[in-house]
Image (cartoon, rainbow, N blue to C red; front, side, top):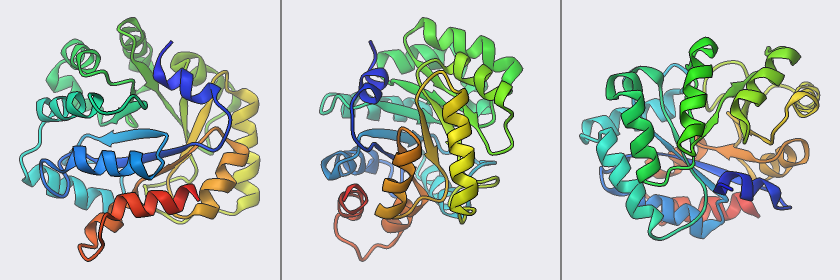
Length: 253
């Protein structure tokens, strides 16, 4: 059984922390991931920087620009994950866009994920028709594909996506880009209950979560909360000491 399945069988609130690989320095990834884990993160999502990130807001776009200017590439990220894996056993997922992975080679990418002990892959722009084949290939090598649903995703499509994902899906809490303001809590609650009713696997919620109150609230109606842009903002504020550790500790309460 993989680490993702094991995590979501446990009781209690779950916090998934997103960090951009190669940001703010090329070699920062490992230190910041370990800060997040020491602060109480239950799972880590490492962003693969991309020049045209459709789902990312200005904060994560800025982090990606800095990381790319630092010269980070996929082979570097796999090396960093290997090093991180020597020091922790919590689930690690990579979040990236489909085109760079196609260019890298899907089989090579999945094999390198396996070798570096990546647990899951999130591809926000993966077309569902191509997603079926990708999910099969990923699961064949023991990697959990984590597909996305949104407030406008139909019940039938949520069922299909959860079947394809099998271990975990990612529910976007707003329509738009990361780091945006959340819609009304009543509307979100109805949406999350609908995902819960139709998903065959656990689901985490992300986009716009930036406080301990948010993390606790989303854990009531889902299996975990993802925080990304708010953490990247703390790293961009260079005056803070151990920004990731302290903010994650606050988020966990």
